[in-house]
Length: 346
Image (cartoon, rainbow, N blue to C red; front, side, top):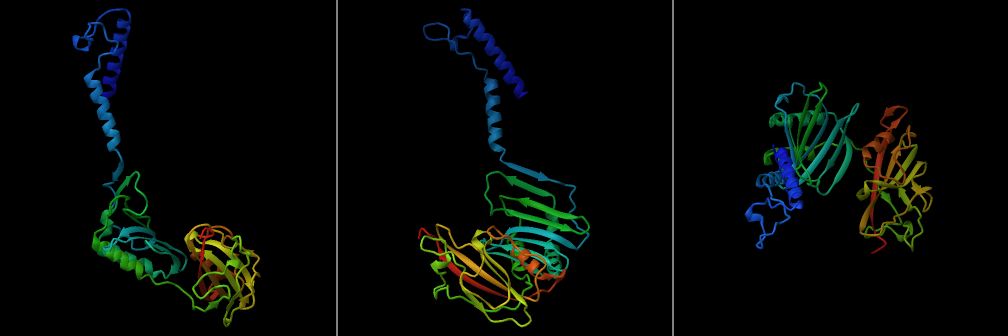
């Protein structure tokens, strides 16, 4: 009806303009000038103007796409989770996110909050522990509701996506408003923080290129005064290890890989010995650069990670290092050494 009103108003206006062009005074008196000469402004249809205004108001109001699926089941028969994505706030107003996916014999976990990003593997029991939280707070009742508000940045709202081996699923999402109560958010936060990590014994790494205040020496950078030399590293030998794998990552740059040295047979690396090395070269801010050394039983089946590029998920790299001859259990121990480096515009 609104489009029809606009079409009628436009047609009338065109006819009036044509008549005025022929010298005929057909406009109502209220649209004439004071000297009684004919105005060339067409008479506005008040209904047409109202229709246009209503359409504009509707366009401004439509900022959120909301979908409710009443047919979505609010009871899930299966208890066997194969993947889950959960984003939520707790009572301390911290925003959290975790992603779980079932692997053959472990669970890959990505856990984030306002300050940290962790990526690791956990026992399969983590999935049944999450199901207990879902059952206790009847979170399946949220199934079938999604709302997306355009223009909202990341870090707001909530997401609950749980996929089961039966093909059943819980899907609920709103990027603008929290969908969990404070009690539910606290329960999810407690679960997230209690996830048991599959880890290895730790050993200590030292470096002559790391100062007492935790700063990397300028010689390992690509700055104007730097030499782009890989840092000197040393560690205690690990019993049973036939070789070591050495890496350097920058966690604030999506784990960009700055160093990779495979098949290291001695418990040290001399300065500048690493062929795959790219020194720090950022301009602004102070960033953290972490060295990882893995003691391995044997050579892994693949060379993990991508040198000179982002490597978002450490669990993928560690899983590849831990696999030799198609079998898991290749990593004996791990060492981590962290240092800071200020940008060139410091």
